Picture (cartoon, rainbow, N blue to C red):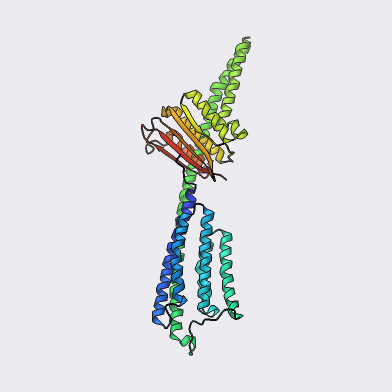
Length: 404
């Protein structure tokens, strides 16, 4: 069976966002490394000084981080990988701060990027954890130096006052003012761009939701019209005929008509909501549906159905997709064989329905085959549905519905 990916659109969107943050991080760190290199060349600071070495190591660290991001298959693990990278950043920054004079210089500002990233992209509790780690590491460096547990590394040993010491002035202005805040401005603009893209996507989804709501109202009205027609044509006429039979004294005929009315009522109730779906679960309800379909159409059905219980709303959505697909086969496909496969796997329900019928062109035929209704059921359950068909080569419908 060709399975739909268990990740879904949300994981892909989150992974894409994190990949963009990696790009932003590389650009900002690259800018910082360039500025640090300028400072190294313009002063008596060694190239091995952490001012340059730590940001460069930090930049290199983004390579395995990007690889790990691409390997994660669910959002929780992706968030944990991201949080782990940010925690490692905090440790690198603590080393940088300690080697650049501890609390003597602007070390506290270096945590700014990490805290922004953590609280913008991670879940709330992970953002708080990274923020606490940043604050705690800076306090730990300050107290350890104060207590003499760590050596103090003055960045600018000079006999003159620091404001008269040219390397200090150059470093403070270029790194502290130009480099740091230029990178910060770029980062914030990148975040603003991501936010704007998310807002556009949200507005797009709102428009889709409004269209789906309108279609749902129309579908409900159509369903009411269909039920009213069946009640009038089947139940109403049978009861009226039974009444006439009773009035004419034809008791046997009246009993037969009443039996037909009872069976018609039960059939209508089963179509609206199969009792087996609530009593025994998805597998037995689908098995009964497929058996009825096979006996009424003569189309051979090959089925693999779930034995496990499936919670709502995945259960109802999966049943309705299968039901609508079979109705399409009954009306349009002229098929000889239908293969139905529904499974509960991992965190969701996967399904595949394939027939060997006449098929159709999905680009030209969409509304008349109940496909929007199937999509609505799957979308409401947070899943994905794909329709594949070629004229003359049958139709295949696959879906994935996550469990709550």
